[in-house]
Amino acid sequence: MSGLRIRELIRKEFIQLFRDKKNRPLLIIAPLVQLIVFGYVVTTDVRDIRVGLIDESRTPESRRLIDAIDGNKTFRITNYLVHPADLDRLLLKRAIDLGVHIPPDFSTQIRKRQTAEIQILADGSMSNMASIRISYTMSLLDSFNSQLINELYAKRLDYGEIDGRLRTWYNPNLDSQYFYVPGIVAFLVMLLSLLFTSMAIVRERESGTMEQLIVTPLKPMELILGKTIPFILISQAQMVLVIVFAILWFKIPMVGNAFLLLGATFIFLMSTLGIGLFISTVSKTQQQAMMTNFFFILPFFMLSGFVFPIDNMPTVVQWFTYLNPLQYFLVIVRGIFLKGTGLAVLWPQFLGLAILGAIVFPAAVNRFRKRMD
Image (cartoon, rainbow, N blue to C red; front, side, top):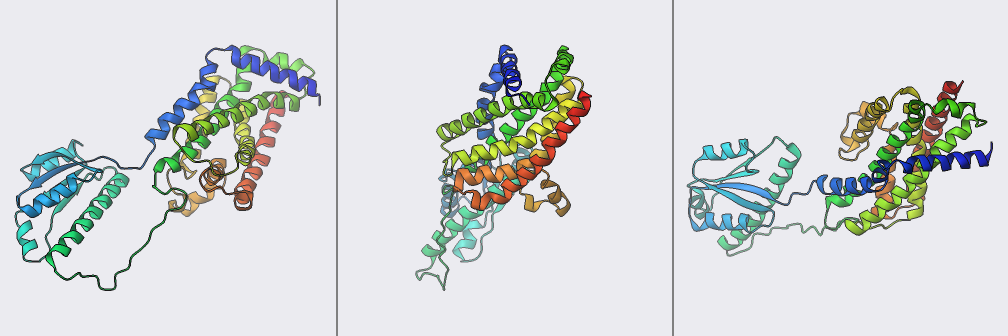
């Protein structure tokens, strides 16, 4: 194996890659734009709940409840309505997120020291968001009930109550960006490495230079290394770029060892580059390679735990997640970013990545050799 031949092929790849002006924004600007877009769009935080309200009681008690809702920063009363049918209409049009209906006997029941009921209507078409909104509403009502009970009864009713002192580690404010942005970093590295590697061999074949490479003294392994090393270097550079941007722009803390994260990225790239090479060998055109990429990207994304917890998936589906390199890499990235965990804790994920890389990359190289014959 000649280091000189590999070096010259790497130089040729960089020249060919950066000579095309269309590739420059894809390599530098696209990861940052995607990080910004995904970082703000992919979130489960609920900050603005639009409320439609009907007050048939019109008493000081109902007014206090309305003030409690309107005074909360999470809620915003957008519509004061008269007829219950109006709530249904606005929910159907998605003009409001919650409907609150205070009945005429609301104040009467409270003054009789009985349970007063109000109706809460939620848009359940997005079940996760509906659950969070209902949870926020019930929390607000619990706080309102506590204040009301303390005013109605001269003696406090705190029979052996439990006072829980809550402390949240690693994400004190429960900001969903702390969870999603490190995951987006991992997803972008996978996406870009897959796309560029899968185009490497196909581009040579379409441009007619593949035959020229075959007749050169380059050995198959030298050709593979010359094709993959540039994308390893570019992916590592992009990893550093998006990490710095995530820290400076989104204020995500980087608690762990950055060099350990780069080492994990290198092992992760063995799997993604191997898959990219496999796609490149089975595809005859760049368009076909692009379409084949989505066959891998979507399952990797869905089965990675990026959005949906793996523990909630059916047992059979959970078995398939062990074949997903992104699943291991996400745990590593989030652990190093937020918890500062090291190899002593993350070794199972490193081992899983190493095993997958040791299987996928040689298999792709072997298939490429067969195509070279």
